[in-house]
Amino acid sequence: MYIGDYLGRRELYTPDKLAFVDAGKSPEWRLTYRQANRRANKLANWLRAQGIGKGDRVAILARDGVEHLDLFFACGKLGAVHTALNWRLHWRELLEIFHNVQPKILLFSDDFRAGVEQLVAHYPLQLLHLDGDGLPGSLHFESTLQAAPDEPVTCEDLEAEDIAALIFTGGTTGLPKAAQVSHRMIAWNTLNTVIHDLTHNDIYLNVFPLFHTGGLFVYTLPNVIFGGTTIFLRQFDPQRVLELLERERVTVFAAVPTMYQMLTQAPNWAQADLSSLRFCTSGGAPLPVPLVEKYTAEKGVRFKQGFGMTEFGPGIFALAPEDAIRKAGSIGRPNFFVDARVADEQGNFLGPNQPGELVLKGPSYCSGYFNNPQATAEAVDERGFFHTGDVALYDEEGYFYIVDRKKDMFISGGENVYPAEIEKVLYQHPAVHMCAVIGVPHPKWGEVGKACVVLKPGAHADEQELLAFLADRLAKYKVPHSVVFLDELPISAAGKILKRELRRRFAEDV
Image (cartoon, rainbow, N blue to C red; front, side, top):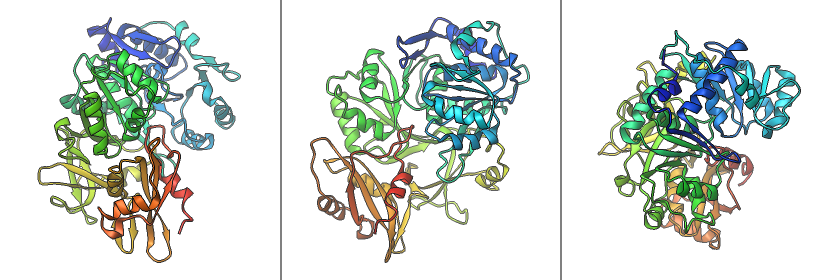
């Protein structure tokens, strides 16, 4: 009966321990596990009164806050499916998702009121507004929750293979696919995570959006299962993040490299005390060595690095802090319950230092894609290996390296060019703050590289200087044909650089 009722168990074990700090609210909310479980029970009772039961989808369109957790745990108690939506999507894109997953209720925040108004004109459903005045017919979330009965709720016939949440893939081509996250997947991801990382007394600051696997499943759910404290912000704010890391004595922090770069440019970076951190975790892209060295020298921070994905959970690979420099650029070694291989186009497994597609097998894999049997079948081969679409290799010591995404690789004059390799070198230049390399059309070579660069404040470099810097360190065919300097790079809600937007912007360049 406790499968999915994480807060029920946590209240049993540590009722008075601090569970969540919602630092995006004013004043901030601080909830114990007993209080958090009470909220989840109330919401579950109200949802059940609306006819929500096992397998039903309930959606939320909101920036990070405790309401995401209220809904996730309430759905777990009912066997319903938590469906968090990417708030960067256009309402027409959300409408397509709604037609596919068919949610019965939507929670939304006032930031997205205009889009929701358009959405429900084409797809009517029950609305709960988290803040603001809402829309005609919508109910105020907090008032509705507090008026509901506080009776324990569990789904008696819930099994490990039942679906807890839908997490949507990036959707770089076509409609985002909805990965089905089962209770089994959550348990195995937690086991992979805690083997390397968590203790019962960790304090974790989450800056990933909660519609993303990074937000819900990197540390948030494992930390709840272990009984730690998790802090939320509405969205990433470098100055505020540094303030919270110091004030709350945070022990575990995770972000992507672009976020770590932005923290170093915050006005309070120099005076920020980060001594409480046991480690920081970086994922999503290779962490530049100069950045590791800066954090180590100035703040004494130890970096873990890793690699995960929506379909297989965030805890796939881990790189220990002592390897951060020695194995710079590596995602580490497979976690305990992950079988990772590198395969060629014919599916043959490759040996050390041979690039090919990263394929994965293990119990933390999702249960396929919701209402998409074709994509589910195509993702896994006859041996049960999930094909990631990442080009990778591993060295003689078993450390894996992501060479690049298949879709980011471009072919110039018949040679495969991997932007990640070029970006790694660019980050060694002292003037480069952030960068992204893309392939653009070329009449002779098919495609050539273009480096999109943001310089550090006060730093100076021109195109010829950076091209010469690269030419001194890379094969000629890898050196981009041009450099463009930008004030900022397009960043996703998860903190990743949106290369597809750069490709669209510079598609006509020759």
